[in-house]
Image (tube, rainbow over all chains, first blue to last red):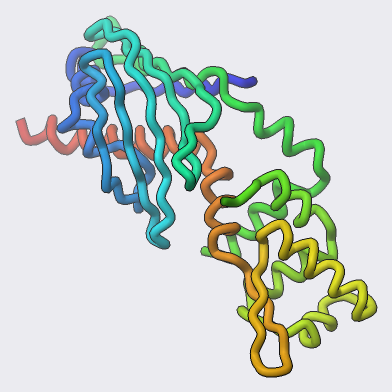
Length: 143
Length: 108
């Protein structure tokens, strides 16, 4: 298992950042990488409960992910579970995401994203020689 | 349903990986055409094709006397879904979040 931590500083105040991170109408503007459509986006991080999202890339491949919002503490933090579904709609290993927003005295806010309990893909990849680069190659061929 | 460990096991052989690369680059090919991929015997190439087929990486189609092989799109999709890293997902999302906030804050 491994954790991913990403930190970003935003110029907006903590309340605004928190609103953009959690309200469905704002989430629709940023959820998922550029170029990925989001045919299903039922994500409301302002309250606890189930969420689900299906993304689709330009080739029509669909990626479904779902979870449960477990804790909301506005305008500071949100915690929710995360699990990808496979093409038979079986939900895979569950990981945990936490959003934290901390105001900065001189203005703006720091956003910290923690994605914990991720399956340790990287170390698994190291066991097979050349395997990561092989995948990169395949991805390039498909590009 | 794509079994990823089997997919990767099948691709974990240099000859088989080269076969799949050629099929991705050139599209559907006959077993005869694939034989020039590596310096190996016809029985060996059939064996490799069988492994790839059983792992669901490639599919076979019979056209008159020839057997034609192609990469299964489902296998490629499964690999691409699996390799989309969480870091990429979040970094790209946060870029968009930042842009959306900037855009709308400036309007006020």
